[in-house]
Image (cartoon, rainbow, N blue to C red; front, side, top):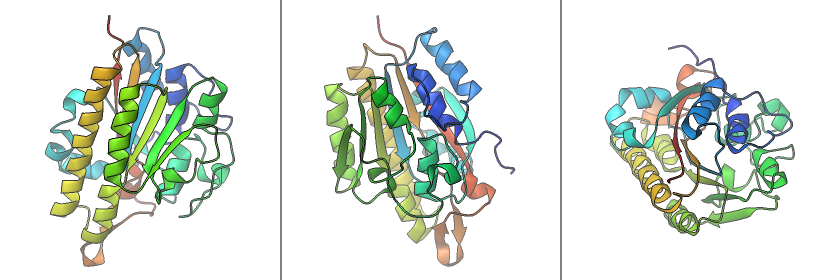
Length: 269
């Protein structure tokens, strides 16, 4: 396996392109493949809704080794598979910092496992400037519940993943936000203890897939009047270490290679 050629930093500007807004100031150029998919799917129009589901630590090698787990419910829920190379160090706040600023770690400022509020321009700032209404739905201890605070936007900071997903479902039904981010860290936290391929960790991955399918069904039911882009978008991969535990953070293909999955839902009628 070799490292994927397309960087994680291309996602941010691609999402801005999808919504027809200016990318953040320090964002890398967008992905031609993702932008081309958006143009084709919406017939030259833009998305007026984006929903990003962010599971944690789902490596490309896991997806390839266990396709029946990752894809048994999602094949109808994605059209585009986008191989990406994450950033170093391949830990959660660093990688999600890059995903939503479009900037490398030395630019957005998080270069180790810490969770300060990012001060540079972000996708959320760009959305707000464009008159859009974004929301982050995440648990109180995770990176995405901390590093993008202090913006004039809606935050639903919950106690646990079950509450995150329940709140997200209610927020989606209200259809009041242009951009929604939902974070689930259950696979990551489990694989650290039991290994990436343990039965219990793979069960958590299966739960992520089911949750994503549920959110996709809600979008089809409640967002039919919108052009919507949906992403299943993880931050980094993982590998097994001594003792049957899992880890990540190294400059290795297993930790850096990931695949994002996207689907466009053109408005009905």
